[in-house]
Amino acid sequence: MAQHTRIAAKYAPALAEPTRVAIVAALDSGPRTATSLARKLGVSEPVIVRHARALETMGLVRQCDDAPRTYELLRVATAWPSTWEELPLPVRRSAAATTLTQLHATAAAALDAGGFDRGDMLLTRTNVAATAERWQAMSRTLHDTLERLDELGKHADAEAADGPREQATAVLMLFTASHSEGSGEHPVPHFGEGEARERTYELVEELDRLMIGLDESHWGRIAAVAEELRLIARAAENLGAASAAAEQSDHPNH
Image 1 (tube, rainbow, N blue to C red):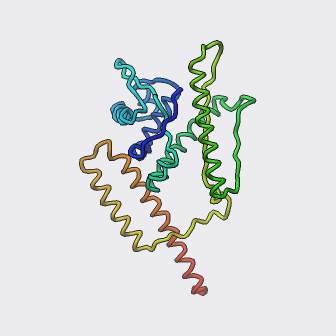
Image 2 (image 1 turned 180 degrees about the vertical axis):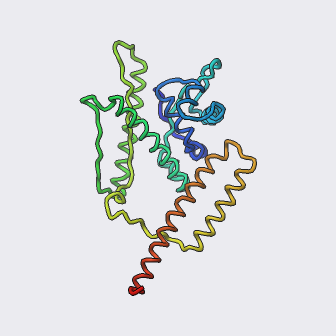
Image 3 (image 1 turned 45 degrees about the horizontal axis):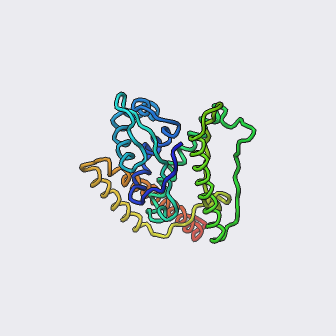
C-alpha cells in the first residue's frame, strides 16, 4: 500500500494534470506496464512515459522493470493546508476537478463490480455548521484519520497473508457546501466586463507563449490558465445576465 506524502508546493500544479492523476490512481492497485496504462487511459504509450517521468521526479512513482517497461506507485501525494493555500485559486479548482472526476470513475466501477455490497461498508455525507475553529478541528480530524489509515496499511503489508484480502478504498473530503443547497444562482462577480476582457486577452497571450516550445513542464500551467478562462467566462455570463435583468427592471414596458 503506497503511503501518503505531503506534496511540495512547486509540484502541486504539475500534479493537477489529469493524465498524471489517472496514472497515480491506476497504479494504486499495483504495478502496471506502460502498455497497460496507455490502454486503460486511452492515450499513447509515449504520453504515459512522459508523464510517468514527471511523477518519478516528484518521488511518487518509479520504474520497476525495463522489459516490459513497468511502473509502481511509491507514495500518494496529498496537499496539506499549508501547500494548498499557496496555490492560485484556478490551480486549486483544476486539481480538485481532476481528482473528483477520477474518484467518480473509480467509485462507479466499484459499484458495478459489487464494491459497495459488504455489510460493513460506509457511505455517508455529513453537513455541519462550522465556525473557523470548528472547520480547523474537522480538518485536523480528517488528517489524523488519513495518517491512521496509512498506519493500518503498513501493518497489513507486513502481516503474513493467511486469507483472502480486499483492496479497500477510502475517500476523505471536506468542502464548503452552502452553495449546494439554495436557489442555484451564482454570485455576481467582483469585476466589470472591461476587466474580464483584459484578463482574457492576457491569458490567451500566455497560452500562445506556452504553446511555443511546448514541453511537459508547461502542461500544469496550461491547465491552470484554461481553468481561469472557464471561471472568467462563467462569471462574465452571470454579469451579463445580471445587467440584462437590471435593465429590464428599469424599463418594464420593453
